[in-house]
Each structure stands twice: as C-alpha cells, then as structure tokens.
Length: 208
Image (cartoon, rainbow, N blue to C red; front, top):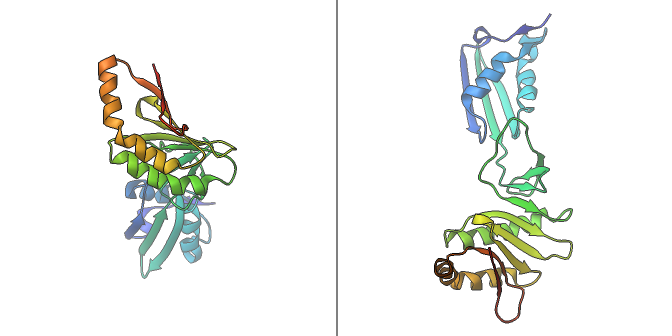
C-alpha cells in the first residue's frame, strides 16, 4: 500500500530556482499530494525529482536530502515567449513544447510559419519587437508563408505586409511616418485596416 506524503517526512523544505508559471505554494501542495512508494525512505530524492519533472514547463529539477530531514529542491522552469502554429510554445532558444492545458499563458505573441522556421522567426522577432516597442506598438502575431513573405499583426488587429526582402528596413521606414498615419486616422475618423510595404515606391493603406 502506498501512503500520502506528509510534512512529517521532512521538517524543513527549501525550494529555489526559476519558477516561471509555478510558485512555491503550488510546488509544496504537489509534493504533499504525492503517493509515497514502499521504498520511499531509500529513494525519495529520485522519486520526487521525477514527479516534479512532470509539472508543466519544468526544464530541470535537482532534489537532494540534507540529513536528517531537510529536503532541498532547485527548479528551472521553461519561460515561453511565443505560441508556435497554435500547437506549441517556444522558449528563447526556439525549442518547442506542448501547450499545458491547465496554464493560461498571456501576453505572448503568436508565430505562424513553415516547419523548422521558428528559429529564424524568433531571431527576427527580437528586432521587430524592439522597433515596435519604441513606438508604443504591441505585436500580436508574425506570419511567414512558404515563400518567406512576412506579415505582422499589431494592436487593433492592424496588418502590416513586409514582404520577403528588406523586412526590417521596411518596418523602420514605416515607423518614421507612424505618427503621421495615426494623425490621419483622427482626421478621417477611421482606423487603418492594413499597410502594405511591398512596393518599391510608397505604401498601400486600407481603411476599415
């Protein structure tokens, strides 16, 4: 018969590391909810470590026992920075992870693109995000087609077509006239629906 763990098994619990979407209270609650195996006293370091690895976004866990009854746990959690094709999330290295069902991940953009293109999108995202942030613009999505044509969706669902070449320079040029475009919205009392930057001379603007 297996029994539930209790605080009697260890009088002192030390938890540290990078928690991300977890917190210490949740980790303690999870540990105390575990069913203790029969050989728990001899192998509980490994037992708890393996169980904690199954928590959402846990990348690395180190568990060790300090005699007589202190349990020391160090956790490194995965920090998702973007959704990938609505099936996965990406970390800063472009590694894909399944989306946990019980965790609501907010305030990260959505990336859409062909297979194995996530690293390229991620590298450009950092540059794009910095350019937009300087102009108080939030990025919602990056979409890349099979032909490497790039499109951004920013706040108010405004679409920006960058095309397949000179994407960053095109975006920077748009930022030079961004305030003018926003003033034009106020004059027309309309919102811009899309901006197409794929022209050699000028741009195309669609209105809602």
